[in-house]
Image (cartoon, rainbow, N blue to C red; front, side):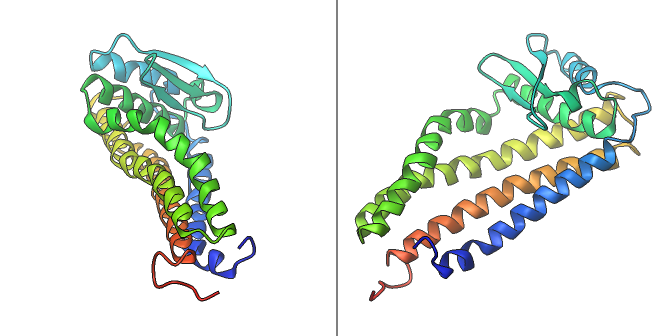
Length: 231
């Protein structure tokens, strides 16, 4: 099973899409991280202005380590920006920072998919670790029931990723609209921001597809889809 050619055939589309999406993100970010915004706001200043303009005063914008480790934490209401985003006045930095601010706007508006995603985090973590391991054991012991049990657990990861898609798309949409409406960047500058955020969105799509293909492989390999194997 560990060297099963079928595995690579099934997951190949997801792997290729993931690699392409990762390349697009790095390429777009590197390109637009070299272009300074007209107003010269840093990522942190842009996020703070967007939050303030929308009446959000209880969210702290903090610097964090790790490349593109940017995230909004709804539990403690902190908007955490990586070093290359927090202090940079580039179009790319503003795009990433205001996207994260978009999550804070979702939180303030009680955006349902954001709450659903947060609720799914514990089960997704369990499914990611235990579910995959159980599926592997199921194949090793030729137990279709064990594979099915693992697949049910692992499907929590897919559910989390599916719920994540509208959350991420909506945060980007909010950011794209607000930055121009509020004069954070110009309409012309938004073209570069769009390319950065659209590339980032593709990584979430690729992750969901990869997870789905992994599930399909284990189910097919166990004979639960497409007919039972004779070997």
